[in-house]
Length: 149
Image 1 (cartoon, rainbow, N blue to C red):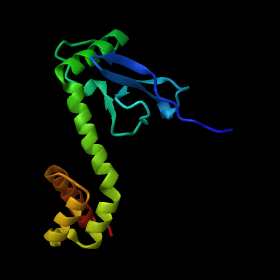
Image 2 (image 1 turned 60 degrees about the horizontal axis):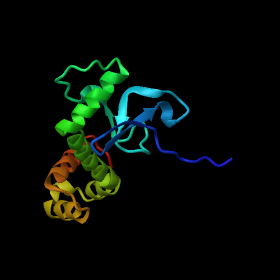
Image 3 (image 1 turned 90 degrees about the vertical axis):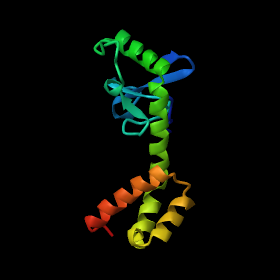
Image 4 (image 1 turned 45 degrees about the vertical axis):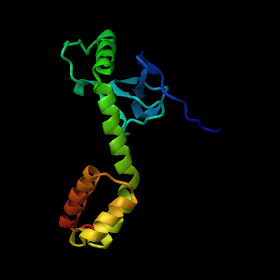
């Protein structure tokens, strides 16, 4: 029997932003996670787009133990730009995830930390920003120190 993918149900719609439920074990027939939400309709539990509502600024001290409080916090976060900032951070993480494996393999294979020219060329090949290059350099350095080949 074929298995299909369906989008998650919308938890909140506010000012053009949609925030979706996240389901236990990524199964829409399971219960929703109490504090995990996403801005992506097809996100899975461990995806970079999934966020914990308790990590959002809560200056109005909404009661996150209630559905109403969670919705109000998300609406407030949309209005304050916190959700937009979160989405931008998520997009940066997704770019890094997209190129991570191939880039890491290239860097480790060439000992890129010792070859700055190769390091820069490889990072530019994948269209990475300076911040992304620094994040990768740190990760490569950590892996190199651990002796990962």
